[in-house]
Image (cartoon, rainbow, N blue to C red):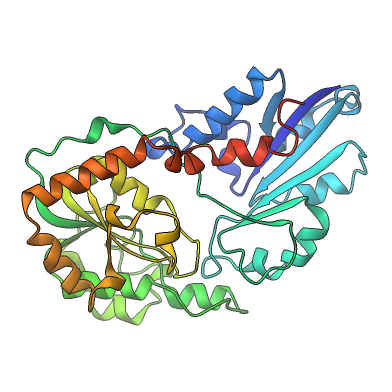
Length: 345
């Protein structure tokens, strides 16, 4: 019996196998590389992998003669598939990428999801009794160290984030899951320190839905002073700076996203705030942890005065880390999740 893997993206932009297309305009900074490598691995085992929307194009004979393994990365096509009552569809994994401040629906529904899926992958597994709840390591691309050019770097801090109103997110998530949002801290840090340069979408738009944010409206003219607009490639920006301000959307255990890795890939040293337990996952000598200082300004002051030899040592350690087995738990995360239940079968 043949095996078909279905990956269900949260956004329809990735339908029709666009999730596996390195040439896609959605593949900013090679973020689709983990999915392309997954596809290559699956096909090397003699199996097939497609985005879940294409399941409905399969003929009845193919479905009947196949063992079908479904994984959701935020998509909900499983609901339609379950209504078809095919007994050869295995609902393997549900992966929760977003934190509760962005979309808490999956967290509130986690008991129901556990009744459907063999495994639920999330950032923080504390407090869950079910063995189905497993730690998610944010999938990362193969480390490209070609950006490690340290000539003509600015001794300043880059901050790359789109504008997101914490008030809007709280209104959207009526049953707000936690109070540890960091959107406000991110903006406050930028406004307090003249050595931070801001990049990202929406900051220059005075009127849009994410302008429902008093701190943004009051400080709009101050924000624009060092705002350099949206970016096509984060890495192209970060490799111009000695340091990068990496502040997650929310401070919850285990929630470590691409932000710190983007800094690593570019040779920019991360100034980090987010997961309280980050030292359990990323070696502490690879980044500046704001929690170790009185506030973000003290951390930045330390960085800007950092001797050249210390900069070199940080970058050397980061480069070694990206070539280590420790990093591979992020690099091979998707392959471990998707193929872990029935690898080589």
